[in-house]
Image (cartoon, rainbow, N blue to C red):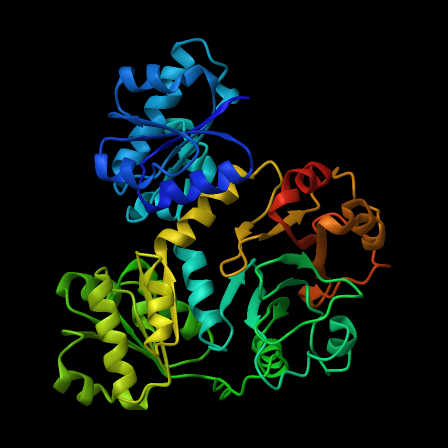
Length: 472
């Protein structure tokens, strides 16, 4: 079996290593930092102390036996250089260029953030750039719609996998789960369940839920999220149609969030302490929008926040780089009366802490980056690939029916029978003439067409078998 080499033993590198070990891959983790390697010592993989940008390190990792080279240090430049160097050494030592895949994590560099794969592969040798920003925006905005949902996993094109706990008074307790769900108008059928004892399974006709269990649903749109929340026993105030939004930080994610809410006809205010960054946003295409206000000022300036009228906003989101500062800003917004507060943090351990102290939604850049990298690791099945937080025995993936795919012309029922009980088709997306992209529930009689996209949820234990069945 060939090796998966990961440069960088930080939180992202360890998360990727753990996922690959779970899939029974041979993993080699390389880092110069002894503290990072010490934290990785519990992982069942080979740890190497060294500088990945040296021939010595390439000797130690056995570069010619490398199937994938993944660079996920905290430096974008170093990740790009490491992938380019690894590709060059691999080829110079006789490796076939197509036999090793190189993936670089890039967070900050605007040049690579917006590039298509065809723009950088030729001159860098890198096969994939992993940037989590767009998924962060999707997860933050979806998660703020129904705060009681524990985790909202965006699968693209508006399809979400939602994880919700079953609370006291839930209408889903007291009988077969699928039958109970069918009696609730507009509620999608539950896909998976994590029992209070931690056991995970795909929901079948005999499955019953108890209070405290976690349930997985596929949702499209805020109205479905609201139905899931209600069915699981929670009461929540619906999101207004065009919320007033204040965003702290004209960061790349902050700009993307502003554009998202502007596209929904919301009024958006961006507060940025750095004058150059504020001016850059004002000078951008979005900066000319009549419903966008960009203010140069400190997010903790109480008088400024009062002048802005922060209490009149429906949503506050912090995208500032400092985790503790971002939490403080979000807490200030809640204290001032904002009902929904979201924030972007690096450290994934802070996500649950944020929920416990009463903030609505936090997203960890590092955690989302792990998913962004794994999507490229699993790129031999074209589409997204996400481990589901709070229900980590499950993965969600999408599969594109490209020209020539073996399942084109098959009914969904036939494809589902091929997958057996290892995974479940939860949605089908199709472009319909005069209507655009439509997401359909999985009707077994529907026949797959070219450019259809199916969304699947499965158990991680069987993901290799499922992927083997889904390859074109």
